[in-house]
Length: 439
Ligand code: ATP
Ligand code: MG
Ligand code: MG
Ligand code: MG
Image (cartoon, rainbow, N blue to C red):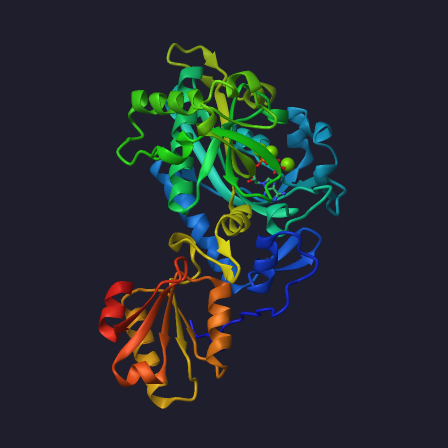
């Protein structure tokens, strides 16, 4: 992408309406623009990051055996009357009427809809187990939308729903999602600690929230240092290894972690003082097992192996895809701007000419741009006629993992500079070895 042809409205001043660093940086670096309270347009850079995050979530759901589909944003109130949640949900639900006066709502979540769809399609035990998911916009009319996309009203969520014949099966589906979540967040370059959660209005008895540590987080958290040391994503654990999955779950459960809602001071005091980690955190995911709450109230039944009807056991599993954009920035930035983990960066490399009026620099940059693009490397080429210092400042702000900087003096000796955004480390290299590093 050539910066001169992109739409990348960078702000020089820090916006005064933003309270936390990720929101400020998202506005300054031109990732989003608010169009109404808690509702955001995703500008080109923000949209690229959002899609990277979405794709990691999708790949890990697919690996875990979940199946993607897409449900609409608008739902009929009647569905929610069947589960009893239409009245219970309260003012967070955005309710509307169509021209025929039918009551509709903008979905805050999809338990009712998926249960209804599954009921139409699944008839016998052979249709189970299944985990279905979609990545779709939700609307919750939050009392206080704030912190930018972290607590928006319209936001993108991955929500998965599992259907099993019995509790043992449902627990296994839950363990698979637990592992998928550990892998998802690890791939994004962030640490999200699974914490025992109160299961709240959805009900049921098994529930974990995934929390990214950040001083601006809304919940207080307590956990054992083991969550920083152990490789919880266990690369060699297979999704069909039921024993291994259960062992992982048992290890997660027996290692202390809790939010202020579930914190147990007696158990906490048993964690060695030098292993106690305490701080604030952002909820980026939440998994629940809630039994037959929706299947029973909505009449979902399948015939079992012996012909008797069975009410499936269900769970639901959410990831805050758009919230993650903010949460990752909270966890990864410095005084100069965003520091994207490579897996979610909008581009891998920022290509900068220090002198936009130097013919040799432009020729070298064009050549490097073509070669990187041809090799499949994502490059943002700052081809504007701006001062070098300004360009470097915007590159730091945007936070691409690598900057390839071309100056007339180095170039005369065949050298360019490669800067690592995270460490600040700079190296003078020949063009070929710089390209080798990046491909
Ligand atoms: P919170 O406690 O932050 O209000 P929640 O517990 O109400 O979140 P869930 O119903 O568990 O949210 O939804 C699944 C995920 O969706 C959350 O873990 C979070 O990452 C994301 N999410 C929820 N509400 C919002 C919001 N208003 N804006 C952005 N993301 C959200
Ligand atoms: Mg909420
Ligand atoms: Mg919550
Ligand atoms: Mg939650």
